[in-house]
Amino acid sequence: MHAPKITFIGAGSTVFAKHLMGDILSFEELRDAEIVLYDIDEQRLGESLAVGNKIKRQLDVPASISATTDRSRALDGADFCINMIQVAGYKPGTVVDFETPKAYGLRQTIADTLGIGGIMRALRTVPVLADMSKDMERLCPDTLHINYANPMAMNCWGLSRLSKIRTVGLCHSVPHTAKELADDIGVPVDEIDYLVAGINHMAFYLKFEHKGEDLYPRIRQVMEEGRVPDWNRVRYDMFKRLGYFVTESSEHFSEYVPWYIKSGREDLIERFNIPLDEYPRRCENQIADWQRLSKDMQDPDKTVEIERSVEYGSHIIRAMVTGQPAVIYGNVTNDQIISNLPQGCCVEVPCLVDRNGIQPTRIGALPPHLAALMQTNINVQALTVEAIVTGNRDHIFHAAMLDPHTAAELDLDQIWALTGDLLKAHGDWIPENLR
Image 1: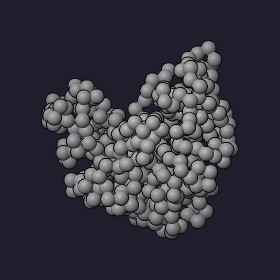
Image 2 (image 1 turned 60 degrees about the vertical axis):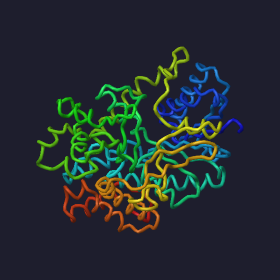
Image 3 (image 1 turned 90 degrees about the vertical axis):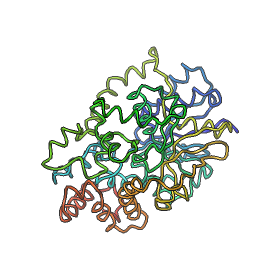
């Protein structure tokens, strides 16, 4: 294959773009890649370009790195499109997603995947991705669209119905959680064999073994000995009740279910150490960190740290370019992959990657209680996607009505009023027919 053209969409996410550029250019087979950085923010785009050129110099590779605010130019002939956009950004998008529900007494931790915040983020994001995909169909119809943008499942599900472009969604929760569990039980993570399946942020380790030994008894021992990390109490509690460990962090998971965040139950917040408003706090910290680091990253006399991340993106590109197989965890359309989840929904499973592209592993049936728990989240995803695809605004309210956390906190009149307020507050960020 020719030197691949790799387009970064939303490249103003400079720190994440830095990790991915370092990953890609660290592979010998990809050192001559053409990387095109695209964003609507010229300042952030310029900062990302400066970082990319610094990585190129440090690695001494012949890669081509350029930046543009012209989307058509960025996509034209792209072999791979890596998407990392955040429509409406932290301000106003995330702020509205948190502050408006809070006025109704509905508190959240991350609000980017499910819940009323996740629904709104999907309404902002899927139409933009679908519009981009029309350009891809015209300018690079054979590209692989690698989506990192949240809400992962709703974005990928929506695109599967609105676009012909091949898409795989990537998330780092599987390898991150494996490393955390490995640290908890004192087993090197690179010696652990695991099998994970489910939906994004609610997938479970169906197998977690070391040289044929089931490691779940050792994880139970962590609970018995009182060694559960303070920041991971929710997931260990779910493990105690379900018998399987979930992939997504405790702060995320606590808002996907109705049991941990409840008005008037501060004892639960304290007992499970739930970080309410965690995402806005994280965003503010990242902004402050970036302001401190920005000058250093653009200073030609200072180097950047290049260390391979756990992200799957570069492994996919390398495998498809060279034919050397790799196994990644991807979010793909459920086409007879998990038999007791709805066909067409977005599932997260191991996938073989080579020149043939992304080839998901057929899982069969999940343990029924895990599938039932996932279904409560899939209901919300399905109705949100249906609203976007069909333009039926009522389904936004139905999605909110069926959201586990929202329904546990608010009555139907409150849910209707809150949803209406959020749609109004988002204004032009949401398609006119859905406002």
